Structures are given as C-alpha cells and as structure tokens.
Length: 162
Ligand code: SF4
Image (cartoon, rainbow, N blue to C red; front, side, top):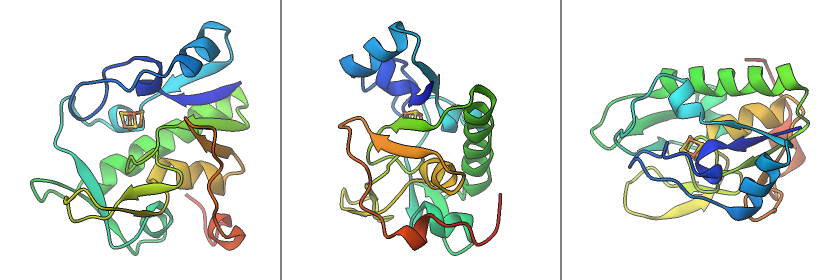
C-alpha cells in the first residue's frame, strides 16, 4: 500500500481548488494500491486557501525549527502544516505504507523541488514538510514522475523526532 497526494487522483484540494490529476495515480488508486491524503486539508487549512511557501529552508529545516511556512498574505501557517504532516504520517503508519507518491513543488508534498519562499515563481532543490517527515520515518517518497529525490543521506536522518 502507498500513500498518494490526493490532488494526483483528481481531488480538487489544491490551494486554488483545482486538482493535478495524474492517470497513473488514478490507476493505482482504482487497483486498491494507494490511500489518498492531502496534508494541508488534514491540517485544517481551508480550500481554497492562499498559497504558502517555506521561508528559510525546506521541510527538514521546518522540522528542525530553522524555517517557517508563510502564506502569501504573510500569515505564519507552520503549525497547521505540521499538523497535516503528522496526520499523513499517522495514516501511512496505520496502513503500513512503505512508499508515498507525492506532488512535486508543493511546500507539503514536494520531494525534489519547492518554491523558494519569495512568491516569485522561483524554485530551489528541497523537500516539502510532509515529504520530509515521511522520509525521516523510513517511508520512501517519490514524485508523480517517479523520481526519487537526490538527497544527501544525512538530510533524511532524524536528529530528533516529531
Ligand atoms: Fe494537498 Fe499535497 Fe496536493 Fe497540496 S500537493 S493539494 S498538500 S495533496
């Protein structure tokens, strides 16, 4: 069983109330091989919602208290994103998921790239918050393109726990 970003199977759960439907993800769901989750909705964020970006690092830095998640209106939404990441981890552990397929570029689900925190459309190499928490708990994360993040191993190790 795998976890999959809910927007990839057609749920209109993105910040702009759209989906990012991916046919391979839909097929996996239909075959009973995946559980859809949207960490941002699980954390209590509304849909639609202002877009948010990680400021000061990536998801690992948020877990370690070095970066925050801020929405375009300047609101610090870190705690809601953390709550959603923890819920997604709980679901993964409940179903025994060893792998997650998550939407690239999202501050929650990105696994190789995220936006750089300036709301200017620029991306940087980095990991979203939910992806980081899953990785630190031994779950392999891939993007919808099937790519595994090219992360140095030490970034995936947990200095503490969440
Ligand atoms: Fe939800 Fe992740 Fe999709 Fe964003 S990328 S809408 S957090 S499932």
